[in-house]
Each structure stands twice: as structure tokens, then as C-alpha cells.
Image (tube, rainbow, N blue to C red; front, side, top):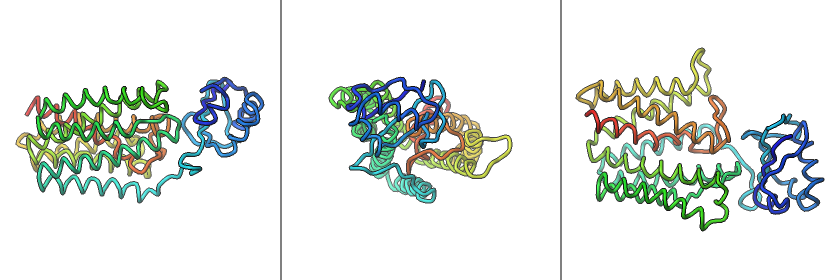
Length: 326
């Protein structure tokens, strides 16, 4: 039997967040659920989005044993999940990257402000699409964590980053306690992970700027090369390679170029780019899991800024490696 997961008013109508329901297709599962939970539940099915194992589904979609069928009511008064055009998605990432480059060239203060603004836009995009999939994430603690880390690092350096990161984790847990919508364990864990990661990443980017302006440019080049390669690989098949592998290769190539342009030792930048590549892959996978419910290589992941998911996570290992070896 399929595992039916319910959210918002459907959860309230059924009196349970999940149930085992028989059926070989989505339509059969929904019909069985309507019979079990009554007329009010059946009325709510008409406007709910249906996802099977993290992918949008229709009534004809086959369902096997142990598959997860999620029913997600409309948000914002009935709006449905709509994908942004690819040009808009990559354009937003390019705009944020350009803003970070310009801010870094101006001053540390401008970079801190831009990190907070970029992080806030990304946080709400991630939280919005995760909620549509049925795993609400606290956007407010994530934005506050990013802002607090950037400002604390600007003022106090490494101690500020450490204190803000710990505070961000505690704040995320507290926010989950006071907000009933975020109390399911999946939401608690997701909010805590992305908040701690976002805070540490924001602080690490400011720490990188405190070390050297050129190292921020180097990181942005590496991240841009990796994200571009992943984006292209998702649209043009490359035999023997998947987007993650090509992203890693592009990050390493970007590290070599950055080392030749800005670094004293190319090998140091190459090692740091390897750390950044791991962070970019981890961030992409985490974003895919939260936004779509699984790890997808070539399928488009929901969200206008899903290409930005790994950027904040990757800067932390990049900074750590350079601090240890350079």
C-alpha cells in the first residue's frame, strides 16, 4: 500500500498526517482515501496538488508499494505550483552573482549588505518551494541567521561567525517550537540544517573578504563555473558525465584559473576549489531534496533560485581550506 502524506486542511479533515492507502494508481489511492476520510476530505482533494515520491503526478500515475503520495493544498489563496522559465532562473542567479562581484569590488560593507539581501531572496525562494512540496521551512529564522552572521562577522571576525552560527541553530529550533506549522520533525530538521548552513556560509564569505578581496573573486569564479556547467549539462547530454561530475570538473578548472590570476600558489587554490566543489554538490543535492523530495541529476528542480542552493554552503569549505594551507 502507498503511504499517503497530508498537509494543512487535508490533514485536519483526515485527523492524521499520514495513512497507508491501497491502490495501483494515484486515482485509486485518492478514491480510497476519500471513502475513508469522508466528504469534507473529498472536497479538499479537488484543489490539491499531488506528488509521488517528490514528483508532480496525475490520476493515471502508477503507484507501487511503499511509494509516498503527498497531497498539498493550494497556497496563497489557491495559487498552484508554477515553474519559472529557465531564462528567468539563470538570469536571477547571474544578477545575484553580478551584485556580489560589484559589491566586493566596492567595499567590505557593501559586500555584507549584498550577502544579506541575496541570502534573503534565496531563503524565501527555498522556503516557498519546500512548503509547496509539503515540508515547511522557516524563512524568517533563515534570513535572520544569514543577516546576523554577516553582521557579526563584519564586527567580530571568526568569533562572530561562530557565535552567529550557533545562535542561528538555536533560533531555528526555537522558531519551530513557537510556530505550529514547523513542528513536524522534517520541518524542524530542514529548518535547522539550512539555517546553520546559511549562517556559516554568509559568515565565511565575509571572512574570506577580510582575508583578501581577490579570494572572494576567486570563489565567485569557481562557483560560477560549476553552476554554469551543471546548468548546461542538464540541457545538453554529455556521454559519460552527469551534471554533478561536470560541476566538480568545472570548479577545479575554475580553481586553476583563479590560482593563475589571483593566487600566489596555484595548488592552494586548486585544493580550495576541491572543497568548494564538494560544497556545491552537497548544496545542490540538499536543495533538490527539499524542493523536489529526491536527488535529481538532469530533471529541473522547482524554484527560481535553485542554482544558488550550493553557493552559500560551498564558501565555508573554500574558506576553511585556504585558512589551513594558505
